[in-house]
Amino acid sequence: MTHTEAVLCLNLLLFLQVLAQFRSNGRQQWPVPYRRFDRRPDVDSYCEALYPFCPTGDRDGRIPYMRDSDVISVYRLQTPVWEFKYGDLLGKIHIMHDAIGFSSSDTGANYTMEWYELFQLGNCTFPHIRPEVYPPFWCNQGAACFFEGIDDLHWSQNGTLEKIGELTGSQFNDMAQWVQDDNETGIYYETWTVRSDPSPNATVWFESYDCSQFVHRTYRKLTELGAKLSSRSQTNYTKIYLYSGEPTYLGNDSAIFGQPALKNLAVDIRKFYHTFRLHQSFIDFAISLLEAYKKVVLDKSFYLYYNFEYWHLPMKPPYVQITYEEVPLP
Image (cartoon, rainbow, N blue to C red; front, side, top):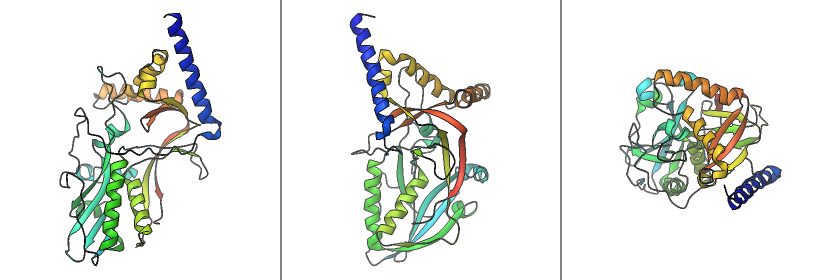
């Protein structure tokens, strides 16, 4: 390494240290705001879905227009994740999927609206480690899907199908425009909610951005538009938590994987995510579980990818937790 290169590397390391210090001196906003975009980017052809996204919905995400005088019933929908394949198996540990149903009194037509991963949950939670691409490669887009029909058995057999309110056709049309704007600017799925500890007064470092968060945003919008929503049962939702001390900002792909001075960090991030790679053999999976336990529990370390940037989480007990907790209707 030449003297000039050494000076550049040193300056880069000092810059990152100052940036991390700046973020940790009370000026960093917690939770970190979810980044929105001007438009939804095209999907990379490398990303493939095991099950096609929104197979019966409109390809452009359009929602039908309702007459202003129509009365639209609103339904709360919830069922175990992958219920169509595993029944109530994931419901037993409260891993649930949420959606909203609508029914037009004018036409009698029913509709389902949900927000979920384009390429399944695993791809949104952990990246692909590709030999030909140095940064971890993410297939983490999520989007809204609106389609005709409500599969009563799918939602009610092991979950919830409950009418919670009514809208006018005009309110529905305003909501539809908001959904399309929200869907165009909120483009990626985030599995984890990161907190300082499990107590009610804990600091939230990062919020998830998933199916239930979309439902909550939509309920709030409907309330803003004048709808009255109420439920006869407790409205619980799945949350998947990581617990850590104050996160440290690391940088984006170009800052970490494009700088020779940060080669060790880049290698460590790739090695960390390699542990969580998809489609492993049984033996590899068993080995990966031990590696994940060592990294997260013994070394108390986790790399989080949020807003297309990497953060380091100094993990704390109980480390990871799945809860099924009440979030009242607005």
